[in-house]
Length: 227
Image 1 (tube, helix red, strand yellow):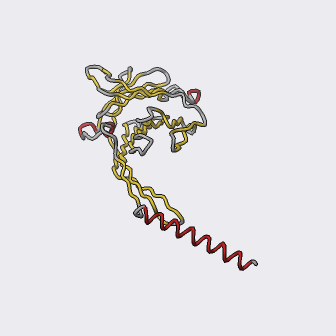
Image 2 (cartoon, rainbow, N blue to C red):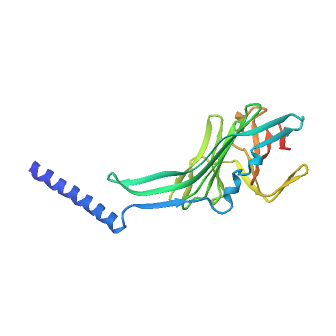
Image 3 (cartoon, rainbow, N blue to C red):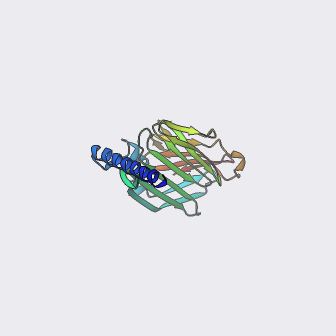
């Protein structure tokens, strides 16, 4: 009886595998997809080499010179499989840049192409804080302050949150700093883990299309702007 049962289970397993392979064949086998940045979103990354170096200055006239240290552009690869057989491969456009100031402060930004139902993901890291923003859902999907973090869960129907994220992002149509007028500007304001901040921790960040970092505000209220 044991041998018969084992034999039947083996036949059922083989039959199931054949059905899967047949289904894959009917779907023309391996499926490959490439996801690119949505129109206009690539402008959040700095591509003008004349802007790879810039100066920020605070209200006390202390200047901070930032320079591009690292940059990479490629298509990230991910795949899924059934019973060890790869059935789906996807490639996502990705661009990363990291700037370092003469005081050792880093400004990191990266853009990752989205996939349905999600939009492109912009990740910003400055000083003690970091966040990710989804352009389709117009929402912050994660926020980090030192070792503290909140993040949303990605499902096939959108984001789900275990903890509510209170930080905010607004897209400004313009922003004038000194004699310079910037077009589209992303303004991030931290409202999570604020009790963890020091006096000189970053609390607000302003990122302009084609320019990158143009302003940030410390927890003390001190503003640092681009010259």
